[in-house]
Picture 1 (tube, rainbow, N blue to C red):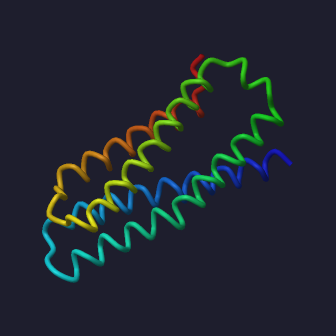
Picture 2: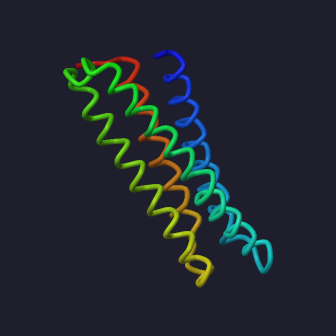
Length: 139
């Protein structure tokens, strides 16, 4: 049972982070685009985040919580609390990116490539640290 739940948790994580990384790459292109192309990048990113991204985040968190309930001994390890804190950071980042995208719809000129590349880098860094903590279980 646990391997299946772990697989579903990982599927949600991969899907969620893939969407965040894809959306930030799309949005880094917005300042270089004009007219309809700019609008389509923004709308596609918003829809991707709102629909698929939210579902993927919910799947990742639901199955992650289920894993914790099935293996409560993990809560005695220090690394899990840092991981959960970083996951909360990813959730806040997801909400920030979504709000930023909706703001772009009314003011597309406010986007900068460097902002979106920075958000892409932060997302990647959080993912890397979470993976290291989860696989190495350093403490």
